[in-house]
Length: 136
Image 1 (cartoon, rainbow, N blue to C red):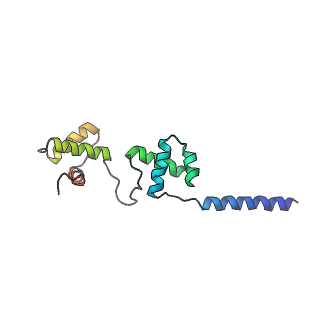
Image 2: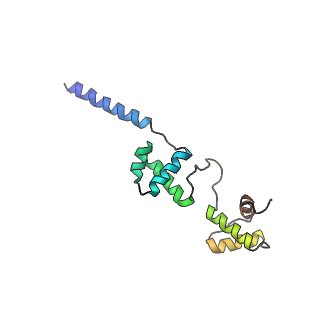
Image 3: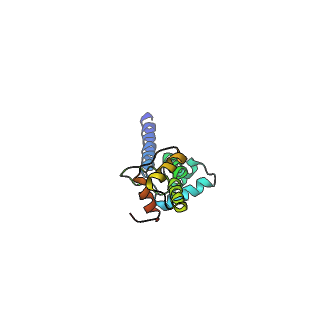
């Protein structure tokens, strides 16, 4: 009888392993935005994770990323991390449009004073080009 109980519990643990193996490690964009919508509607992270069949840490990282960048799309996996956020990029574009005669050095200086962190002279024209202000 002891063996039977022991084999029964191992069967349950195999089922639990199979269920955990079927969970996805990342979400596609549609599911990411669905999760963000649920979280904005005050759903708990654990409930969203259960609903989407992912681990709670996936939802936690998604929510942190969304709160930081206001974007739920997957980050690029290779390359250097961006120094500026989308809000920083908007600020640079706004400053450049208001005073079109400012040089990259002056824009970088103005940004550093406003944001409290330095930005390289090469980054300024890159961000302005991405924003469609001018071609390099």
